[in-house]
Each structure stands twice: as structure tokens, then as C-alpha cells.
Image (tube, rainbow, N blue to C red; front, side):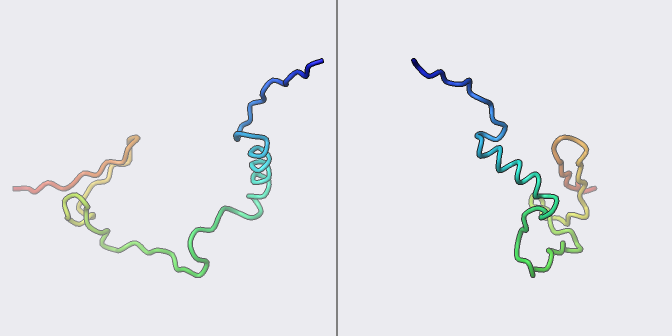
Length: 82
């Protein structure tokens, strides 16, 4: 008598082990939180007040218009009024 193979089961995370790990993570995340990035005692990064300079035109970023309304963020460099 030959053994029948079971129909392959679709796993959401690739395998039974992946599914198990993801279930455990889903239960533990509310208690332990997300992964810590950086050093524990490191001060948070402070952005410069002036906004930096544009990598395209080298003018201050405060003079630029940043459009985030569409699917891609667009940077509009200032035009010289002559």
C-alpha cells in the first residue's frame, strides 16, 4: 500500500515554523514593544534649524517647496526672479 501525500498547505509566512514565529511575535509585541534601534544612551538626532542645503541646487531648503500630496514626494527648487 502506498502512502498518499497530503495536499500542500499554503503557509502565510513561508513555512509552519515561520507561521509559529509570527504568531509568537504577534502575542509578545504588545508587551515588549518593537526593536530598539541605536544605542540605549544615545541622544536623539536633532535636525538643524536652517533645514540644510538642497542636494540639487545648493540653496537653503527653507526656500524650497516640498510637495507630498501625490504618490511620490516632489521637491521644487526656487527659480531666480530676474
